[in-house]
Amino acid sequence: MKLKSRDLLFDENTTSSDLQIEILSRMAYGAALAGVLIGGVVGTIVVLWFIGTLLPEESRFATDPTPDSFVSEPAE
Image (cartoon, rainbow, N blue to C red; front, side, top):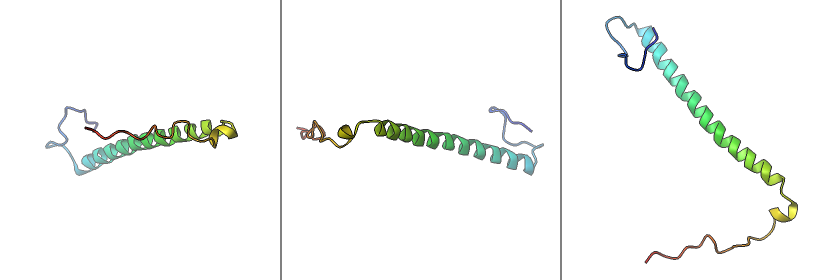
């Protein structure tokens, strides 16, 4: 029994195994989406790390050219 988004999840013809299959498929879909999201974040971090390894040695260990750039003035 394949449910469409507008169908009721159960009616008089729905069996327990149909509901179990539906719930399991929705859980698997959510787990797949979470895996894609986490994979994207990890992939972005790995790409940035790889780009950082391509920088020259002097660039990686140089002092910050704008050391006070993170300090903000208090709101008035």
